[in-house]
Length: 337
Ligand code: ATP
Ligand code: MG
Image (tube, rainbow, N blue to C red):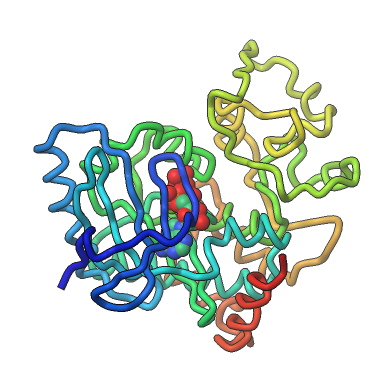
């Protein structure tokens, strides 16, 4: 039986994104806590109904790697979606509070996301379209699951500002107008994994270079990499202008204090520059991890590996991390405050 809005009472805020706000709620009927997401939908009643119909597909999405779905309903100008509460929050929340995620845990994140992507595609022919750390959630049972996949075409069309929130994890071919494929999700996974392991969004004008990491000793990971478009100053430059100049001026990073790469610069950078890599001056990562991320980030989608191939890679298949270890880790991120 699907959950209705009147079964729920509000407990606390869990977070907010571009299109929605998420609240921890108590379900009186079932005597348990859940997460309720309200999405502001700017559409006619007929479109709203269509969205609610399309969201029913989520009812059939049952996998240990997909956040559970309990129902949806209209709430005045919003569409409400009730989801399984993931009590450790998103990987984005976690790394911003605790710093870079241990690389062994990042490996399990990769594994969970790949299983989730394969389930969605193989069983439902759904491409996720929005893989990023805020859409990967963890709980204190040591489970990692994905949410916010593109089930409803009408919903995708009706959310204002979608572009701002998703553009930065977008693959080169998508930026250039090619249709979404599961390989686009693999790219977004690669970018997300680097972000989690380094504790910061990977794109800077000096990505992977030695200089980049010695910036003024401030903690780099608690800056917001996805600044809203309105706070970013678009920089218009003549074709071919000052590339060398920009390279030299270190600190021009999307996450750098005050120096922001405009959204257009960033998109151009993703298309034209080499893909970022999992390397850091501060620590060494196992070569299996670096290779895995490289395999996610071939700019040519035909060279990029598929989820099946990636799951068979050494980094994933030889991992010794157990669900108990993940449980211990998830609990540590909550108590550390
Ligand atoms: P964007 O809108 O750019 O996609 P987002 O993914 O952060 O960003 P939302 O999907 O609205 O935006 O989610 C907001 C926040 O709510 C998430 O970052 C996460 O911290 C929290 N959240 C979402 N779903 C759940 C859930 N099922 N359990 C616990 N926390 C959740
Ligand atoms: Mg989300």
